[in-house]
Length: 218
Image (cartoon, rainbow, N blue to C red; front, top):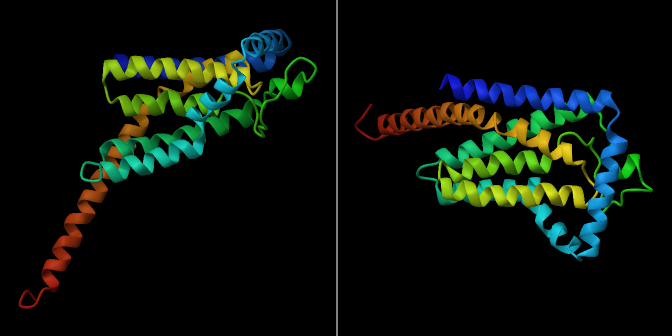
């Protein structure tokens, strides 16, 4: 347990350190060249429509809908959907905070002559919110299954590439998002455990209250 906590802390710290280094180091121009080259490769292979579809794997509304559907499907044992909902809240707060703390300009805005925007994005670039949601979200959905983790890893890589292909992010934005996301999963787990316990306790209290209100029970 301590080893996992240490790894999670290091991952979170690495994400923040990477973001600060990128903000202060002046690497954006170099990275924009790689983004431009990747976009040319994707366009040359006629893969842009594919990546435009793949990018929805990290969309906030898609994940919110998925969490609601999962809660309906697993309402008798809501541990996993509650964990997913808690994760979405925590990761949104974390990514938005880091984005506005570092204020990295998106590649299509900073280098419009090099990078083409295939979609409008408003918030700062680092880290990628799409990748952060998917990286940890798929971990929650896998629920310890090695097979699902392997399959979801492929989807996360494709999603990360889609964010670069669309000109929304640098490659390092997606790396930083993954480093930030995974440590938030156990935090979301602890929150959902407490929430589940509170809901269970409330259910018991309500049942007792109803029982006492029945005729002849006063």
